[in-house]
Figure (tube, rainbow, N blue to C red):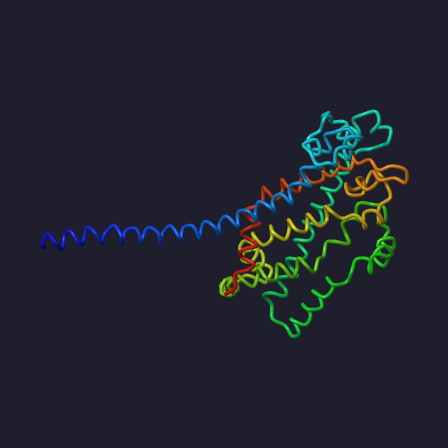
Length: 314
């Protein structure tokens, strides 16, 4: 190559390099702009969700008179207590003279709620797993129509069946007992519908192989379906547990004894005709939220996997 061509190439190279760098920089700027927008949106959503929860937690750690004293104008005192105190928690747990005078015992209410929720989830998994297996793996006439009827029952509002359900519970003689909180919820059309979707993702060849080896339908369910549907079972169990944990109207109606009071009813009773004990309500809400949050954190990998698998087809 002659010296003239070498000089010309050296002159053109910085121009081409500069143009390429500018294009790369422009693409990076566009991508960074899009990422910045998504990050900003995520931060805004996070603030909207976390701020009320943080205000509730910090409000439970301040005196009753301070809770709404600094709400306007918005300052750091709106969230951070001026005088920190555990009085609200001591009251609701019945560890203070005032709490004992009011007969408060949120610890017992939490234990009752946890027992009822666990009992409903266990019975629900047994009954609804068999129901979902019935619809997902067995062939019989009008199966889809019958499944549609089961799903349609989810559209009936609870207010429409509340009174008939109470009459049935009273006729069975379990009114004002722990069975009144468990028996009405062991069968769930939502759990059946959700598990049907999970079971349909399991290859039918596994059923056929098990039947060839001599397994019964129950054996197929126990040794093939259940082990391969653990994420789905955990997901539905978490949702069912949260649903029972947050029940209010039915425990309020079915149970009158204070010993069987659930946490949601105990929190609601801090609102009286003459006063609303916001500090106790916040403290009770914190105590009611912590077990559910911890449960979801412990079972998060199963829950996420179950949600992902429920959207996979084929």
